[in-house]
Structure formats: C-alpha cells, structure tokens
Image (cartoon, rainbow, N blue to C red; front, side, top):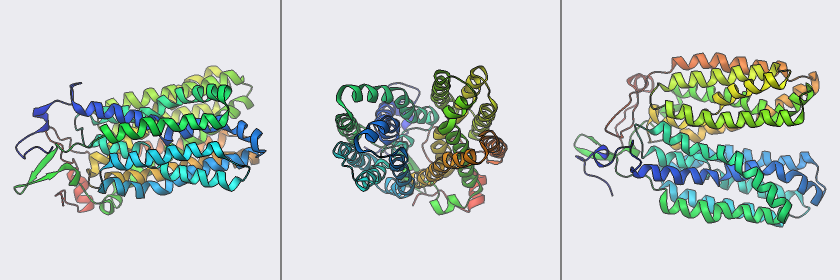
Length: 438
C-alpha cells in the first residue's frame, strides 16, 4: 500500500535490519534465479550430452547447437522482456514465464530422433527462460533498496552461483537413478512447483517508495531517464563495452580451460579442480564486491573487477602447472564474478528505474552475444595455431585497458532517506535528460 508523501520508508524499517521486508523478497528472488534458466538449463545441459547421444545417435555438435539456440534466444528476447518488466508488474510476468520454462524442460522428456523437435524445444526454452533469470528479479529488488542495493543484488545473482555447485551433482544422481527422461521431468518441477508460485506470491515490487515533485507524489518506478537518452550517454556505452570485454575473456577462457590445461600436461583431476576454484571464487566475488558497492564508488569496483579478471586470465593463458593455474583461477574468478552485480547496480544509480529493465536487457544481450562468440573464436584460432595463449592474452590485455577506462565514469549521487532515482548532474548534462517522473 503506498505511503503518503510525508512518509519515508526509512521511518518504517531500516534496510540494515533483517526485519526489513525487502530482505524476504531478496531470498525469494535468489531462489527464483536458482530454479530458472540460468541454473536449471545451463548447468544440466553438459551432463545430458552423452545420454542424448546414446539415445538418438546425434553427434556432440548437433546436440551443442541446441544450447546455442537457447542462448541466442535469450539474448534476442532480453531487451523486449526488459520493456515488459518496465511497463508491468514483474512478479506476474516472471511467474508466467517460469511456468512456461518448466513446461519446456518437461517436454524434453518426450524427445524423438527428429533434431528439429529438439531445436524447437531449445528455442522455446530460451524465449521462456529470458523471463526467469536475474533481469526481472533485479527489477523487483531495486524497487526495495537504496542503501543496501549492492548487497541485495549480490544475493540475488548468487542464485546462479549456488546452482553451479548443486545442480550438476543432483542431475548426475538423477541420471544414474532414473534415466534422462525422468531427470528432465524432475528438473521441470523446480520452476513449476518452486519458482512460479514463490515468485507470484512473494516477489512483489515495493510501492512504498515515493518522491515529491511540484506538490505531486510519484513512485520511484517512474523516475529516471528514457532508454533512448541512456544509450546515447557515455556512461552507458562505457558500461556496455566493459561488460562485453569481460564476457569475451571470461567465457572464452572457461569454455576451453580444461582442454587448454590438459594440453600442457596438467592432470584431468587438477584441471577440473581449477575450474571449481574459478567457480567458487566467482561466487565469493559476487558477494564480496556486491557488498562493497554499497560503500565504494561503482567505477572503482568496476575497474578492480575487470583488472582482476584480465590479470587472472592472462596468468591462466601462460600457466604450465596446477600450482600456477590455481591462483590464476582464483584471481580471475574474483573479478569475473562481479559483472552481474555491476550491471543492475550501475544502471540503477545512473539512469533510475524508469527504463531500468530495458537497459539491463540491452546490456545483457551484449554480454550474452560476446559470451557466445568467444568460445567459437578461441576454438577456430586453436585449430589454426594449435595454441590458446595468444588470443587469450589479447582478450585479457584489452579487458585491463578498458578497466582503466572505467575511471571516466562520472560520480553518481548516492541518495539517502529516499528511494528516488539517483542520477549525477554530469549525466544529466550528458544526456540533456530530466528526472521528473512522467
């Protein structure tokens, strides 16, 4: 229920208190990300390759193409999904797409030897899945938080990090016990029975935050610049370019890390452990750097994140033993784990909530496309040169150079005691925008 214009949400309950209702919403959003596309489909797919190969005789390239189709579908749909989240109540849309995503996963249990059916299912899962990852949940959480926005977002995006630990062993157990068709049916229960109902019932956007302009009351959701004004700004272009660079380095290295280390004589077990170190470090980085966002300028966090990612990947590109690869993976993970916190946090601080999800969808599309191109590019170059070192070194150096460019971002105004959108005067001058909510 909206508060009157004289009422401040800080007078009701502090964001620093565990009793603040926004934290319960954060937990629900974390669980939503955990059972959505970013976890259930992404982290189960590789375990399904061999069972599908044995069942239908498809080769690995044909099976992997389904993953690419799903990922491309998410990238294409994200900006349009963002516009929907900006116009309508996110929880109802998320719950609807969560249910559709669950039905799409369940339909994989009835695959036939026809590849076109598999590919159509993958496209459907990607389209539905674009409404289930952190895009929509970030829109909900940003309506609840000002002072602790970084910490709140870090918990939400950590849902996919937690899934990277828990989903693969669960899927492996289900495959051994029940087989791949029943595994898909059981996995579908996660979004259908957990994600959709919890989101619909508890992931409500805050309607308590209000601002006052010219004697009229307007919700914070209506304050900020338009997406057209935002994408014309230097701040948006710097953020988007930085995210694409870190995606190229991170996803390129991750996709080829095990074969690259194996080529250098590192044992398979040690190579797998290196991947685990990178994953654990990434999760820790999301939580730590997300928490720091509430106390330090985002441009400094972005610079540190990209420098760490670039440095770690450069060291991985030249690692010749497990003893050199392990610390390199630790450094790379700490940096690479923060980009999903940075995107929504910085967009909220610079551009407000008015077009928040649309902008998030645009940046995420660039992130996803870069992440899809990188493994293919590395594979092609390796086939021609027999080495990953050169191209990974180029990616990492470019990432470090762009990291320094993050210092060109203008300072944002950190508001307190109000949830009105915080956009720096430098950005207003840059875009010619007004923050009066329409």
